[in-house]
Every structure is written in C-alpha cells, then in structure tokens.
Length: 221
Image (tube, rainbow, N blue to C red; front, side, top):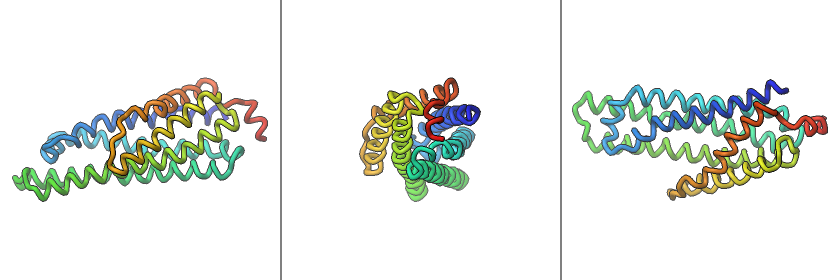
C-alpha cells in the first residue's frame, strides 16, 4: 500500500513538472504573431514540449488507476467519477496535441512553398492553436469536476489532514471557475490556479513522506 501511495505522489509530481515545462516551451511559440515562421524555426522545442505534455497525459491515467482501489472503499460512485474524469482528461489532452502537430505541417508547407504570409495557411494555423487551447480548457474543466469528488472523499475519510483536503476543494473550485470562463472566451487570470497548484504540490509530497492515514484505511476494511 505504501509503495502505491509513493508512486501516486511521484506521478503527481511527474504530471505537474512535465506539464509546466512542456507548456512553458510551447506557449511562447504558439502566441507569436509570425506563427508559421516561429513554429518552423523552433520545431525541436515544439516536439519536446509535445512529448512532455504527452507524459503528463499518460501520468494522470496512472494516478487514477493507482488511487481507484483505495478511493472506492469510501465512496464507490465518486471514486468511479474521479477515475473516469482523469481518463477523459487524458484523452482530451492527447487530442489537443494534434493542433500543434497540424501547425508543424502547415509551417513546413508554408516555408517550402515560400508563402509564409499566406492568409489561408495563417488562418488554419490560428484555428489549430485555438483548438489546442480549447481542448485543454475542457480537459481542465473535466479535471476540476472529478477532483472535487476526489477531495470530498479525502475530506470525509480523513486519508489526509482535512486542511489539505480543504485546500484541494478550494483549488479545484477555482480551476472549475477559471476553466468555465476560458471555455466561454473570458480570461480570469492565473490567480484562481494558485490554491490548486499548492494542493498538487503538497499532496504528492505528503503521500511520499507519510502516505494515507493508516487509521482511516483500517476503518474502511
């Protein structure tokens, strides 16, 4: 059991780090004005960013699989909801990676044809970027809904200290609000991400160092 909890903690950290580094490499490129030119000149950075975001998408499924046996002891329906949400999140994130791949193909076609300013290719490129970010926002919406179920189980079961569960509930409520606004085309800023980011850094460290509360697990048997 402790080994599984440490693996969950490690996957949480892997997911967070790979996403932060991957998006940190991709976002500046995808937000440039000369989109097709910048993508073609930074192809290796784009591929590296996509690979890291793929690692994140795979890691979240591992988290769900490892947590499922423990969570279902306390609330079978919510545990399944959390598992399903993370699988859906992973699928949406993987599909979102198609956008930058299409962009790479368009940039190569544009440069090889000597038409980097072609409005048609630029429009397709912008649509590919918009689809990428829209799918990401929907994935975060799904994540926030499922993770609220997860934090509710943690709070009721006392598998971790309740203060940590409360941070998670606040954090994923903020993520839900932010993602909903983003899907609607509104920018809520990054402040709503802060509590959730704290939770996703503190929880894995807690799991790797202390694990779930053994008394709470004993009461569930």
